[in-house]
Amino acid sequence: MRFLIDAQLPRRAVAWFAAAGCEARHCEALVDGNRTGDLDLARQADRDDMIVVTKDSDYVDGHLLRGCPKRLLLISTGNIGNQQLQLLLTKHLASIVQAFVTSVFLELDASGVSVRG
Image (cartoon, rainbow, N blue to C red; front, top):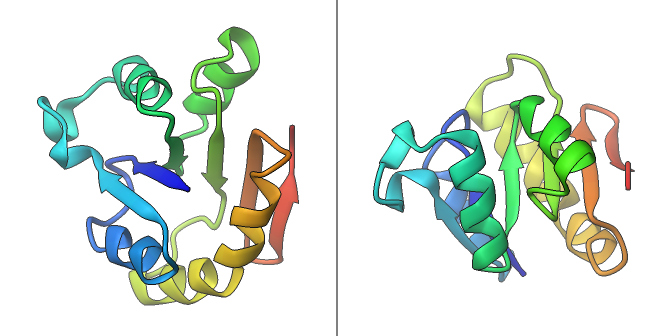
């Protein structure tokens, strides 16, 4: 499974996904890096068959209204430290991967993973 990580999340998240056997790329690897607009990042993810990983709720609007990005993982943890985020994400990554087999929109918060679409 392939993930494209938004600028609001740390670059080191790529390694967290890789440790679970997933391919991941941070938006900094794109041509415009952290300045890549939301729509451009969503379109890139769709072209590359990747799942957008973000804390930015604007992607939810794009997903629900335009179907872009096609697949979305919204992280709704509020302001937590990177270590806490890593623990939460790695704890739930197997269930996230499994859920994306049949779902296109998931939300991760402090209580776990919810299927939104």
